[in-house]
Length: 105
Image (tube, rainbow, N blue to C red):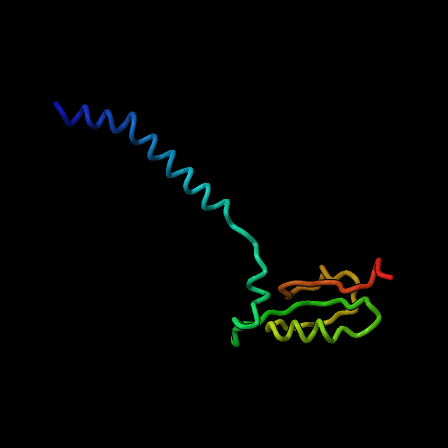
């Protein structure tokens, strides 16, 4: 008598709202992912001794980049240098950058 009417009320009104709320919550939590550089560049006071990553560097400046290399090593980033112009084809690196003076006077 009372149970079927409560079940009908729950099935028609409460269950769809609950499912909508759950779906919206899951959608929001999955769309809030953010790519950050925190795994590669740690603040100096938070340096981790056991974490390091490698970075492929193409030095196209024509001079040495000692300051950049020292800053990378201080962040537990192992710089690896290449002379290849297409650095995107070289595998096994967490990242790659090209350092150049293009557009500088």
